Image 1 (tube, helix red, strand yellow):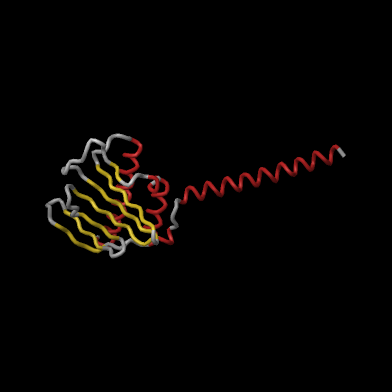
Image 2: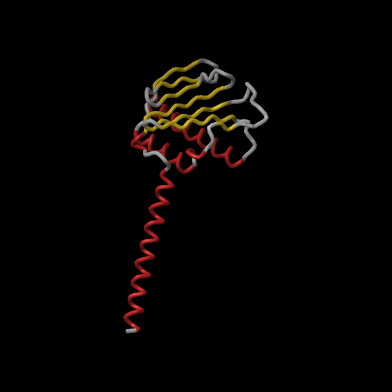
Length: 167
């Protein structure tokens, strides 16, 4: 009787541990995924510049990309992201924690028109997330690093796609 009870308790404990690991793993993966699914992705808009006018603009839905080059000439081109680029951006944004960022990242002391500003907007179905990041932000170092990572991720991906088709 005593041996049978020990076997049953051992079996029950093993089952409970397996279930706990499964439940914790499931919720960990759900948290890592972020609030939106990549299949619901509709658009990515990326803008940057100083002052009120952001002359540099990328729209993933249309592929329209315009930017000021080193000679201050406006370059207009069409750069279409592939599905693997979108999946990559989506997964990296989840890793960085983009969905938890505030909508405006700037110093409380005010904003100068000379400060470089980036705007990222992602649309998933009826949901959208827009973040405006001022590069002089220095109040929260961790948030600043994450915002810079988002900017570099999007910028580098667009440049890689553009270079792939122009060179």
